[in-house]
Length: 139
Image (cartoon, rainbow, N blue to C red; front, side, top):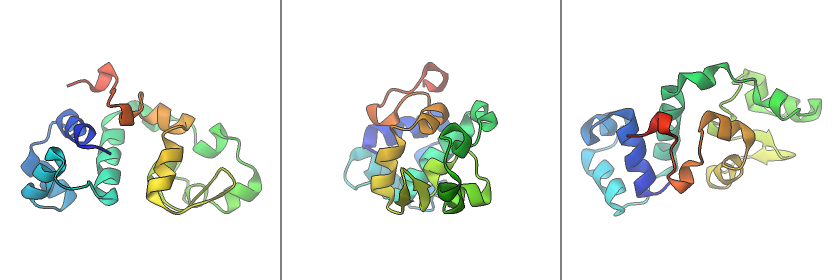
């Protein structure tokens, strides 16, 4: 996540830097430095921002489970925490998913795979890496 995407999501959520700092459990200075590009946005802050945005769009709450959309074989399902906990379409948020035939345990490599996935694209109408939010999310 880059500084523009971070700032755009904060604006879509309608939060001030101070409000967002409370939600992320960081200082206001940290939020300011993320938005200025002075600090790299940590993966836990990126994940939380994306989760807030996903919940902002209530339309995606009725999505089919990812294992049905992807038609995952039983072997994959039995090894996947998303299937085990029935998390449905929040697979992009969880580390340890069994995706593309193996456990995805690293957030940075996992989210790159997720951004090309149909489930992610249904939750987020446009790839946020390109900073192209749909008009539904426009500021």
